[in-house]
Image (cartoon, rainbow, N blue to C red; front, side):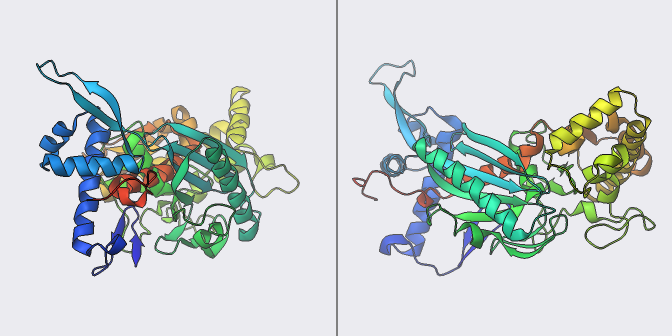
Length: 433
């Protein structure tokens, strides 16, 4: 049985046989070597086969065989002779290909559905978002709309001649990643929703692997790999949506917890006499700093749950809040000040627990960072442990509301780089060694 981890890697159960009758240990070694060569070419290409052999410690004959298989799978290509400035015949340079292999990340959230696709080299192939009232819709209706988004994006990729290596779905909730089931997503009203199973019934090829993970975890991975704080080994990402979630990178790795449920920071109680949260508890942090709370305070006539309104993208809601702020509406000033203070109080808890160097503000937090961070920084400094709080800074994400779907696509890419054998051979003439 295969098990999905929160970081998107796959682990195989002991005793599992290799493919095509190859003994398990031999298949595992070859898969590992394929990944080793592919990662080197991805990181250091263009490079020669000889350079790959020196860097990886594999002999040249093995590297030649491995490169041949990677070429057959459409993962590596030759770019022509590489001149190193020495006398003799120039070597042939290798680079990452993957231009015909795609990775798709999709997200369903309270008020939108998004899709983001890249090829394995990181070229963006699709980036779209539509307004959708998932909070006011049944899980079945939401999954139908999500499936439609997937089908349309897959069709677009097909027209580009791109075959999908996999799909990862981001959902704001607790996820059983081994089955692709949403255990609970309070702001969506979902309980025990089999997302992967439903999408497997969509009008796409049955062979495409489908995984499901928490939106904040996926967004944190996107930030760690390509965001404003990329490479920071200890960071916390805050979603800044209607609900508030956290993705925690500790020591360069995603902190997932025993059941993969770590990071539900929005449901930490910060006010025992506060309002009831959609999770059923009192005084959760997201009741103070979530987008729904800001909208309710700043534009009460546009609050979530108000009947008869057209579903609006969060960008539109923020544009209206900014317009009212520019017009001098005192409710907006008061709301932003209150959100900033509560953001800092919750951040102090995160600093005391996880000692991050950076707290990355995503979603609407990023859009309004210049107006909420000063108050947040002051509160965090006053309540966080001395030293830890002083060395932690807020930064605004530049990935927008698409961070989770971008991270979801990145997980698919990472999986392909870790296991090239998951990509079908495109050139049948190849013969494995």
